[in-house]
Amino acid sequence: MDSVGVFGRTVADAVHILDIIAGKDEEDPMTQDRLASGITYTSFLASRTALKGARFGLPWSRCWDSVAPQRKDVALRILDAIGKAGAEIVRTDFPCAEDRIAQDGSWDWKRGAPHESEYTVVKIDAYNGINAYLSQLLGSSVKSVEDVVAFNTENAGTEGAQPGDIPGFFSGQDDLHEVVKSKGVEDETYFHALQYTRYQCRDRGIDAALKCDNDESVSTVELDALILCDRKGAGQQLAAQAGLPTKAPFNLGIVRIDSVSAGYPIVTIPIGIDTNGFPVSLSFQHRAWQEAKLIKWASAVEDLVQELQGWRPTPEYRNFHSKNIPINPLP
Image (cartoon, rainbow, N blue to C red; front, side, top):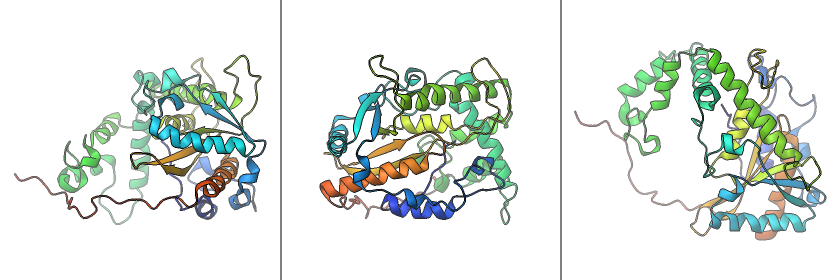
């Protein structure tokens, strides 16, 4: 599963918080390769002058070619400015796009057969991870995923257990039911799905797109970062799957990975508002442990955006006077 990082008004705000929370956690092996002692992420913040000579890739198939026109117009204006600042922007592709990404570019974690599906891995890891956390939680009678499901059912009006209870969870807690059904059993289907999704999203996904070797007319060049306008979540989906940990040296003829892996990072910055009034953002992606590079490029582009169009517009809060208090249905 992906992990949400820090939020801030600016890249600098977020990075200052990242410096505080980043570090090794003895109970989380994915944190063991932290930046060398004494190095801070804030040291990688940059201005727009850093863009000169940079080379960025735009994953096209089922990514940029699926961006809505009104959003793409906003993004292309910023991409043009990045080019004028001295960076080179080229098209690239995720070779795994057809296999991993829905045709309309949206995130579909149930895509594929069970032995090739992200969902197979997520529901099993969720069962084991949530239970491990809740089992150590003090001051609560909720000790397992089953307890969570029961609590939600008993408080359906506020917790959204049933379809239609809460608009934000229109299907209810159907995913939690699937998590419970899995019982956390790491069987052959699980390990095959784990290996398959990692191979597709890492070797044939983000790593391949960064090499920019999908076009025979372009020599293989390592890109400084991938840039997406990722409202539909395809880039986020690949990053989450590329970072799935391998828990055993399980070889299925695809790839053998014996060590625990890290997640693939993303930094997202706002760049404007489309004609419908919705915010538009650009996402910067790279391999595991490349947060420093993404901080450099995201802060440089943020500086460029502010120089180009000033401080971003204040968000509009619509219908904030409306009453939307969930209540339990009448018997």
